Image (cartoon, rainbow, N blue to C red):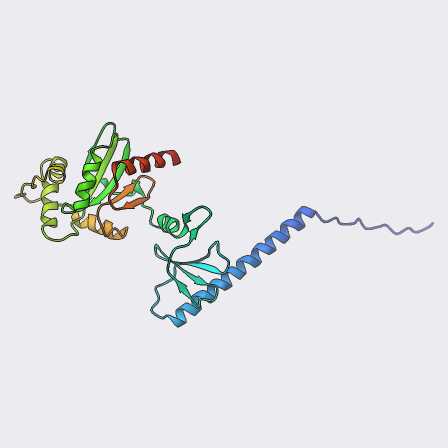
Length: 254
């Protein structure tokens, strides 16, 4: 009887599995390199600039060798060794987009649904379907100009958060407006007609402290500040025409 050794079955490698493994290894290597690069930047800046603010996040930018340093909602930049810290804007000349501003807009976005609308003076036109929030001081000249522009708008609801930041009689005037029997009417008469709000003699709790805290939270330090439903903002007065365009673009982007 002739002995014939049996051949062990050959194991075939699955090319898909091998490819997946290589991809995972490559991703791991990239992640490890990125972590090491971030550590270098953090270490060098911390050692050389002891009073530098805490860096919340380090990430790559579209520019090779340039990294973004996120500090709260502020954005700075550094080279890959942390030898230089750069303050300024990156502008994509192809799209003409200010990448720094776009990034900061996202970081500063406000959740409109979370705004305490009960602390705002409210008025609307038409069906009021389009909503904006405005942080305003009753003695702010540009706020008055913006209120006049708003009279040209249709189908809007305006929530005005009174923040008396301009000094003088702003706190007293804000309280008198809020505590009036019809705060909306008194607010609009003052802003549009210059009719002084009647002095409130009764005890009345106002939301001004909460409004001021809210403005500090969102780094609103000038009026008017206009907040849109998509979370973006406009730091300053807008014409009715510009506001209409902005509201239309927000609807189109939904």
